[in-house]
Amino acid sequence: MVLILGLGIASTAWSLSPDDLQGLIDRAPNGQTVVIPAGTYQGELLVRHPVILRGQPGAKLVHTPGTGDPTLWIQSSDVTVQGLEIQGSGEGTRRDHTAVIVTGSRVNLSGLRIEQVWSGVWLDHCDDVSVNNLSISGLKDFPFWQRGEGVRVTQGKNIRIQGLRLRSVADGIYAERSAALSVNDCFVQDGRYGLHVMFSSEGEASRFETSQTVVGVMVMESSQWTIRDSRLVDGYRTGSAGVREVRTKEVGVFRTQIARQASGIELLDVRDGRFQGNQISENGIAWTWGGDNSGTVARDNVHRGNLMDFAGQEPSEKALVGTDAHHHGAVVKLTPTVAPTTLHTRPQFDRNYWDSWTGTDLDQDGMGDTPYRFDLDWAVRAATRPWAGIFLGSPWSQWSQSVPGGLVIDEHPRSRQVF
Image 1 (cartoon, rainbow, N blue to C red):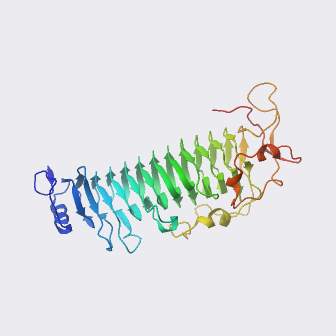
Image 2 (image 1 turned 120 degrees about the horizontal axis):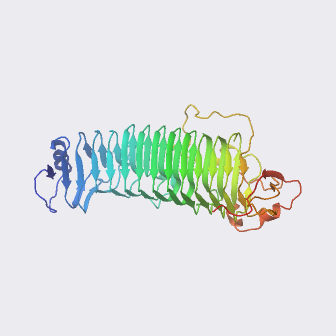
């Protein structure tokens, strides 16, 4: 059975008060489909039992200016919401500032268009939620620290996020204390972090794309995450990075393009990480590392057109994350997932292609006859990188190869690209 605004007929001319629409939703039997015709309806709606809300083209929920509460709050499990436009979010607490809050499990959100909101969707302590084909735009005229997340996941499990287009938000997708999160085919533009993972495990992001972000993918205090087949390009400001990891374990980045960032990949206490098959090109610095990176291997990556292949000496956590930290989660105080150590171990590089390597390959097997060397003592100490972006395209990497006393970085550099 399909209930069309509780009246059993289709129309585009209904004008309902919030109480009327709320009443129709409340009276719908469990599992019934409530079709909302085209028109503009006041929000601050609650879904308190299992139903399907389906908006026809042109059906829009708007937030009443100056009021609190989210525009749509899904409190029940087994709820589906499809095809609605949602405009505006509440004022007051962080929860009120969000357009759609989900506190039930087994919820499906699809085909929503969410605009002019401080924060788009918050999945709060829920499991088995699917978020598909959403468009979310935030407050483009506000700085990052005055925006909220596109999608926030707090203590969630088995969350599937696919086909999102996110613009002008703080973090595109922010996951904290969550497990088994899947992010596929999403695009983030004009934000602080494209994907921000904190105290989370067993997640994957594939075909994830960012542009004009401070950091494409930020992973902190997390383990067993995989980033693959993604594109993290055109960083915002001179402190940008494609991938930034702080105290992680068993996190891998595969077949991903990282380009035109101040720093391509930044690693601080990254244990047993894997970086393979990536294209790292046209960045101010290809790699920056510090602390204990034992067990981390970078293999079969292609490096082209980077100003420097490596930054100077050990950067601190404050240098890597301090300038971007604000109340959206970068300063959360919890028991460490990966405990810090006093070791100073750099990642292991093997079989990578470096366009700055100048050796020979006499037997033409694709592997260089001499190792790739780089003099870290002569490299600029650029942990904070406030200037790196202005030197893109300079011959620094090639020049540094001729400096005597260089450290062996890659024992088996490739003489040609792997792809």
